[in-house]
Amino acid sequence: MSPATISPRSSTRRLRSLRAVRRFSDRSLPEEVLLDILETGRWTGSAKNTQPWRVVVVQDRAVLEQLSRLGQYAGHIAGAQAALVLVMDGPQNAFDCGRLAENLMTAAWAHGVGSCIGSLFPDDNMTAAKMLLGIPEQHWVRHAISLGYPADDDARRASSTPSTRSVLPSIGRKPLDEFVRWEKLDRHSP
Amino acid sequence: MSPATISPRSSTRRLRSLRAVRRFSDRSLPEEVLLDILETGRWTGSAKNTQPWRVVVVQDRAVLEQLSRLGQYAGHIAGAQAALVLVMDGPQNAFDCGRLAENLMTAAWAHGVGSCIGSLFPDDNMTAAKMLLGIPEQHWVRHAISLGYPADDDARRASSTPSTRSVLPSIGRKPLDEFVRWEKLDRHSP
Image 1: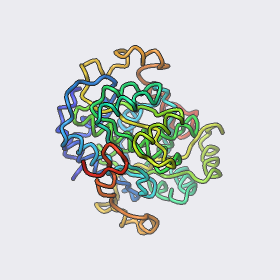
Image 2: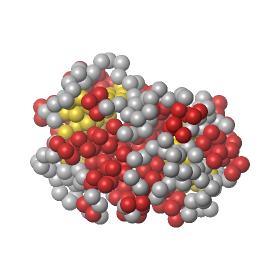
Image 3: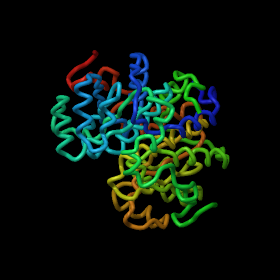
């Protein structure tokens, strides 16, 4: 497919609108939407195309609740319609894990489905998650992604989840001139 | 912006069409395209919104050539119109680095701009890259992203770069039933 069939600006505007959603509605995820998100994640690039990953899809409410207790900021998983647990070959795959997570979240958002990353942390919690999901010890299972339609129009705002808001050093993003440097790290605007 | 203004399927089809592009045309990147890619990257999410990154944009041809020699598979940087060097606070930010990389590459592809990740590896090469770009020693600078319009219609195919093809264990992706498990790691189709 030619990348020119959608306007570039409308695509990047959409990409920029992705935010963590931590409060979900009761509306269930249609199976075809979930499969389209997974199919998109499947095509994520990885180092030398090793695809050092598997995704365990959790929809059982009791298991979602158990997962939500396996990380200080994983509470949002309890109310999600599904969690995508990212099972990596090992901790050396953290970069590829980030690529996979971003692609899955972007694909979800294309369907209007919100998402939030939960960290299964510290290691005791990761071990508990592996036992819960039948994952052998050698894998690295640090991240699970909550999925669900946003509870309301405010669910994308960090300020709408006070417990979250209180631990963030900031909301929004650093200005472009701080984020980008030109040719050298100390060189601002070109 | 409502996520419903672009058809979900056309968005995810586009996401799935992202491939590494290693051969670039001589066509330069319009400044507004480069800035739109960077602006999208700036909005990438990160753990607790720490934004543990900066991006150094390299367009100087001599520096691109020097960077291209700082990794076994970084050769594509020599022919790129720009390289985005991802400067992370430390190696503990590898996951967030992957999120940033994926977002930048997706934003580039929205404009029809191809990209490829180059690893500045092993550590000696990372150190050399830091010296080249004035980056203090404590940062983690493992990845640089080549940007440019694809050289031709085949540039997205791994098979069109024989030196690359020879080191990949496979092309394409594992089937969905291998990538996804349901509820437990050993449970295939639901």
